[in-house]
Image 1: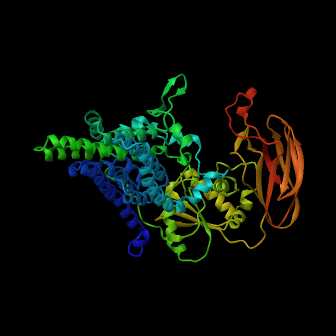
Image 2: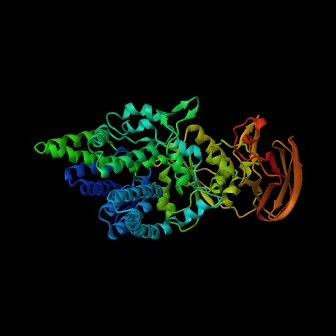
Image 3: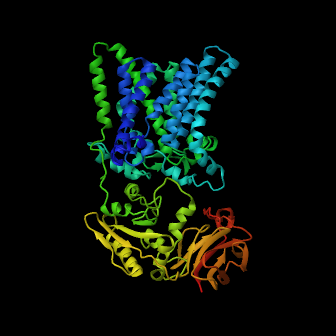
Length: 626
């Protein structure tokens, strides 16, 4: 859709149009679904409001365009329900087409919609048996219908997901989040009953609750609304014998429960059933059984399917109420609409400036290929600034530390383990690491080596201490004064291209655990394999010197350059200094550390009484190239 509109409108205008369409199309899709189920256009209209204008939708729309693209979900659900009620081949084919659109919007929503499809299939089977069609006849009909849905869906989503499937099945599945992230990004039970922080009247009162929930603020909001909750309870009391209502009641409760994650969180704390034992929830079973669900980090987004369920239940209830209040239909419709809108208010909605600093337009006019390092930098889990990505659409240069939901470990390692890049990215936090080098002497060389032409400081986003630290390091290293753009709050350092001698430098690559401070000495553990990158200005023989000791028992360290064994030494659980001769080629040299006996987890050694699950072999300190 962007490509169709881009010749006529600017990016931010198109973005806003597409964002607004998620509300309009989402409401219309839910309207069609509920009108089909109830035959009541008044109930369908209100159901559309409930789904499309939910606090869930508004909150995710602040940051995550994929998560706010919910509009295809009710269309897919509509044609799945038509598949149940009408049969035939046309409906499952159309449902498959909408399933592809759901997948194109957000891959997590694809997984959620897939689970919903499974529930519909089971309901269809149950319904056939209830109509006394018999097991084999029911199986044959259902196989035919859902085979059509599956063929259309998979033919469309396979090109979109082939790379993700390959990564998921590999031993390097960086898409799989740490279990702690799943816990953090699951819903708190009280979030169902707490109005959004964006509410104009109640928002200030709910911030105290949201401050207790560990997730990101846009992921914390899941307010159902008391009017909608009341209508859903009414549907349970009055209409629970209706098979269709039963399905939507079960589906809604199911997705609400799964969105709570592996354990029940209540008011920011895990709810314990007995002395430190958490209350387990259905997500734990699904996590082990549903393919690719272990890659879904933001478990709380399961609630988008529950939101659709609450909208449908509200539609059923309103349809029932309006049957008995024919003379007061307009009044009932107006009062309930106003109550829902009042509870769901998210105004004034936060917006961002679409202005682009002139500096980015200037460098966008050149055709050279070089990278930018912007500070504060994104560390994927720390600071995120989507404005950098917006500016990139104009300047079109590579960025150090752009933003993606997940990326391979080696990308993160570049920022954490490359000298000088690390010090700038983390604001001096890693000024001292296990590699001993003069950063001021080698910083310009490292920037040039990685083709970084500009380092850009955003003054309004850095503290005074961070600005001083970055300025001091850059001035000392680059020996130049920056260009200042006061109207845009930018301080820009240009890195002069070096044609002369390239000094040697060491960068840590794969296999190293995060930096630790051992009594003032920077220290890193490694697993059974780890790598270094050593740049040299010429071919030469050097000595790689460092201090080490082995975890728990003696081990043998082997050091390779490519496939060539350079050095072998026995390492005991006592400090020893290693001086390994290395032959360096001009340019980059990859040095490989291998511990022959492998690594061990402290938690697997009973006498250590440790909860540490890392695979450890040796530590390294005080590394230098002589």
